[in-house]
Length: 368
Image 1 (tube, helix red, strand yellow):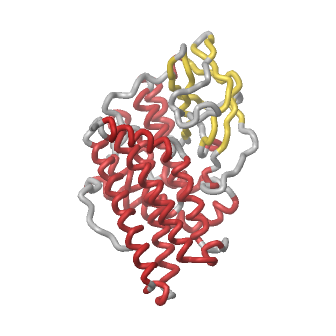
Image 2 (tube, one colour; image 1 turned 30 degrees about the vertical axis):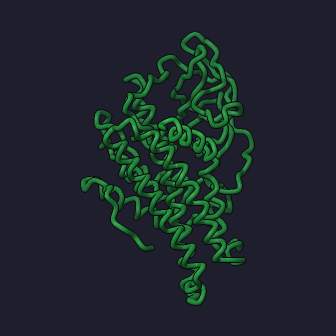
């Protein structure tokens, strides 16, 4: 694919991590079609990322990590998503949940979760719920007071990689206010039969049931620092960017043996616009990572703008690949049909595109 230099660069000291991810991702791509077809969580790929030391490297220096940059996070997520979107999604949720728990938990619990991440334990986010909708950070489920804290009875939805998780980053309403906890999966946590999605099937996104699950007071997280940028929020847009890149690559592969199709004016015109829009989305995502790295309060609003644009760019790029591929793109043996399905997922994930549009449009209009 045609490329252009970017003003946002991964630090030289971290470039080897991007190379590590690229090398691993090339192998992950070999199973992406089968994992999608079988709705199989690619746990061996996720363990390979952990075994490489990447997960632990994202930990703060105080907890033995390298505090890798958000620029490196974005490059890793984008590379993974182009090869295997489900791996990228589950990994981002995993590292984001672990990083949040280490950053926001009391000192002893923060050290515990850091040790667990280094030991290869798995983390997941249990935030979405039946009544939450796009307001998934404002839980509608009340925690019940208990002797050493609270308990939770209820359910969480769309928890990617949950069946492999050892620990959850979970929210509940505590005394009428949002509360976030680190929860270790035990026998009070169960998984009903999975309701498979059309796309991103290998994330194994599913419901979790909680039956008086303990929420110890010692596991209650404090508020994030004012300049803390959540890894998932910053990284989300890069998933769609990687999928859009895969769509353009699939289009190029299909037209490579069809020079007449590649020379058609409509194919060239629509490819030009898709590529430019992809570049714009990537630059916006890289700017968001830069803002997070300089600890700017503008990082989180910019991340909402990035996700909104990147989600739509991925859908348009995948639709173009399907249009150019014609009926061949619908065949199960074609990567285009899977990329098209995967491209829809980002726009549905919170914050959804319609909800993001309301937020961003309000910011623009209110700024006058």
